[in-house]
Image (cartoon, rainbow, N blue to C red; front, top):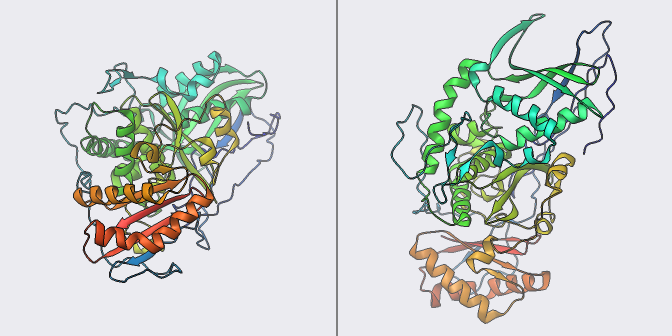
Length: 501
């Protein structure tokens, strides 16, 4: 739990929380540096009832420098030469445009309301209703009872959670109010809750659970205020977009969600569902602050296709939830403030970072859209806690909600499921895998072959092998044409992604 100041009468308190970050670490080639502002208001002479204010965001700070996290600069290998250079040239960028992924068609999000087509997948309803979305594979309903963070709360806190969620679920509840010349848009919730320790702390936990469980509330801002008397909470005011904007976005968001769902075949193993959505987001969304109104929610992901880690993670969470796969957002540090996902696949919990799956957008934001040779980075699909801790740390509130879960399973890690995980380097085994993987990639017009070693020594041996033998495997034994192969190593995770051009 975050260390928060004890509630003091006549004092307005800003609650600092970073689950819904206003920025995050750019995958691989960029990082962002952000600051948290703590503002304390001066006490007033009279306040009946007393008022508190909270902020569930971190202000955006424009990065002043670009430093890779982790350092995984692309290295171009020319097949036409007899042997690649021993020293990688990080400034060399691929010259060919990457081929599109045939099995995952690019998504064009319509700007008008679509008529739902009759598909096995039912489009998720952004406003929770008594009739839950069905999981096409098991007919298991997705309902509020299945969200995870709510289950961590005690019974009294859950009652407040449910009251607030019911009010937030309908953008028609947004009101516009003007006070002291300032106009605000908000949803007002009447609450009767008596805190037992600290009202500010307990309210932060409850509202954090709502944010982590409910990415569909794209119209919420990260700021709220509340009225209280002593330790009793009476009213909550959550600031939002204006009602007209929120309602006009709703049909576009729903259309965007359906467009993604129509790309994924139902009745599959949960791993396959998770992998396909991971690939779709990486292929179709550009990491970008260019849509400042929506970059920090699912609206950026599903409407403009431009968002930061918050939009990537919450879009991934919503798509998984619609299939009955439990997932919630977590936040912390990855060389800068960042957000990713805790997800339950086939009964086991993993960490996944859909933002860092995107390897097509990097560098100067003014160059978007820009196509990199490597369309999907699988390194961060279904990791253990130990693996994720290699370059990420959870913040206090995320650590609180994940404390009761175990992130030790490996059976649905991408490299394990796809046969590309090797504890030690054995050339005959690695070469056999790469040959078959390259053949499969060429046959399916896919671009990426990925492999992971189990330790530093094996990883270094793999890199040496790639330098000396990859052109031979590709050109002579697989029969590839003269072309460039680009590989991107990740020393922290012992992984290498090879792109075929």
